[in-house]
Amino acid sequence: MAVPKHKTSKSKRDKRRTHKKTDAPDVGTCPECGEAKLPHHACPECGEYKGKSVIVKDED
Image (spheres, rainbow, N blue to C red):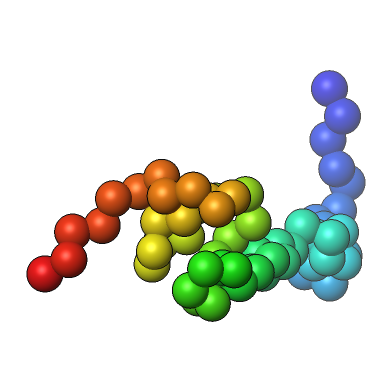
């Protein structure tokens, strides 16, 4: 079994991890109400998806 001869430095370790960062999700706008929403998801504000009401919101 292979065993490292020297400790991996913090610099070397962090250079290897540079590509593992995450990006912020892409956010679009709802064509019905104009609020921000994730693509391919129903709008959390009005409940519309592709022009159809898929989530019924109770009006209080």
